[in-house]
Length: 256
Ligand code: PGA
Image (cartoon, rainbow, N blue to C red; front, side):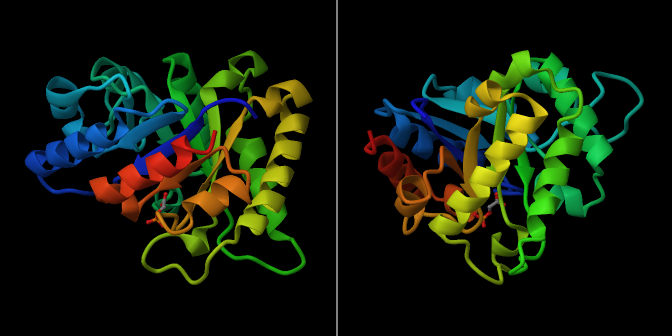
């Protein structure tokens, strides 16, 4: 794949003040100013997006939302619409993160959100991943099923708006019970690409970047990008430290 690597930072429900969010954003912005071959994007809590856009928006560091409603406006208490996020400067959105799935989002919900995001011009990072890994490879059916359901009615001509993040749930966060290997990622990404080929067509499937996520950081970023041939990374905890995230950006950028 000759496209730029995508390094995405999911801040989750952190930090707790806009002052800290701005400091983190400006730190990452400084570290991303020289990037040539890498697309950098951060996903702060939505309440901070306006501040970051007004005080720090950078052409080299995109802003994204961690989730969004499928609906554009109306009686949906507590939800944030794609139009609001677009108007506030978000270009990307994460859909189907395992933490959102765990809070009850269904495949049908995710599909509706994807179609809403698509209509509003977002770049979508669709997260997929199994909760448990079995030696017989039954978990691969989970990934195939998540893709097929989330991507129903996704037009192949809009494929450039789609990115997949493969995040095995058991490898995410402080509670991770294991670590994915770069070789494991590579094998799984081949299955993901084949599935995308059958949902769309081989040419469209080739255009989709497949990211790895789950306890990825400075120590293992390069091995996922080189040995695992990942098209990018979705970073959780280490994206909350401007120095570490900057280091990951540099690792990705020097690879070509
Ligand atoms: P982690 O989170 O890097 O803290 O494991 C990754 C994610 O949930 O996207």
